[in-house]
Amino acid sequence: MYEHRDTRCIHGDLERPAFEATRAVSFPIYQTATFGHIGFGKSSGFDYTRETNPTRGKLEETMSSLEGAVDTCAFSSGMAAVSACFELLSPGQHIVCSEDLYGGVIRLFDKVSIKNGLSVDYVDTGSRDAIEAAITQDTAALYIETPSNPMMNVADLRACHEIAEEHGLLLIVDNTFLSPYLQNPIELGADLVIHSGSKFIAGHNDTISGFVSSGTPELAERIRLIHKTTGAALSPFDSWHVLRGIKTLGIRMERQESNAQELARWLSTQPGVAQVFYVGLEDHPGYAVNASQARGAGAMISFRTDTVEIAHRVLERVKLITFAESLGGTESLITYPMVQTHPDVPEAVREHLGITDTLLRLSVGLENVDDLKSDLSQALSS
Ligand SMILES: Cc1ncc(COP(=O)(O)O)c(C=O)c1O
Image (cartoon, rainbow, N blue to C red):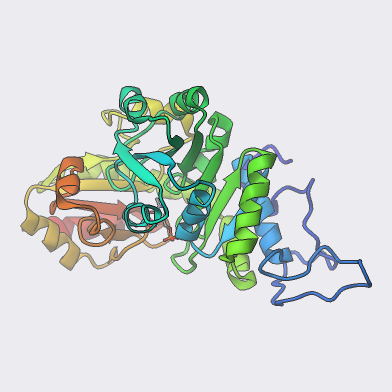
């Protein structure tokens, strides 16, 4: 295993080389549904692409090497990855979950998982007391986003691990916002790590994908079974796309984070901006915990404008930055969480969390930071 993450982004784990007979430098796209058998009872190791495929295998091995996982399964979306984790649970079981998290996961819990007999309590997972108070005898999992979407709340992953261990819970962490380049929850005690690969990992706003990385061989086996059986495996072509994206993950994360650091400080001084939420600002309540468990603060910023009119003006006027859902790509995107990513969250809950009509979320891309400032400046000005 190469010591440095940026090398692993490009080569994966060369101690577990993926099968590639020709040694092509760009791993080939094995665009095939099925594989011929060498003879009776003899297989090349590949039978049918829903189950295994060399291109997807190379991607999965690369992700495992970056996350420090026993195994990783690549899914057709982040939501398919989240759903696969819930397949581990049985009717009657209960999940304690971060109250601030991607709205699609809340929709999955409230509209699908409940029907399947699971129940969920949403709590401030930045508070150990709040997590412990929500645990019941049926609780089977603790589900964390850190930093969270969109409020950038930070949970202490070491504390979460201690609680999970004490109560026999599965600790599942959505690591989408920081990517494996900046944070590795398995090293801090997580059992499963989820990614929407559609974000920083693929990195170019062009491919939907998801990952589940397992911390133990037992979980790896169970997730593999769910992956091949429920069938939401990532296609060979999209696997190749994501592999290509990962090659530049390190350099992208570093530059996007330095852009975000500068923009967050600058935004804090701008007229019309009431509050900035970025875990890289020293006055963010989660700054110290994030710094103790991650190698950076990432490139996601939320900010509150003084009035709803200013929020709408920014969305309508931005030119370089695109008013769009999603995050993590080379192009900067600005999102209106209340309407775009969290409409299914009940209004009272949104109010409680601070997801109001003045909250905007900015995914900082790779553009020159001065151009980003100019764009926001003209959009904010009255
Ligand atoms: C933190 C987080 N997790 C999971 C997802 C779901 O991923 P996907 O859109 O790839 O299904 C998203 C999507 O925005 C997300 O932001």
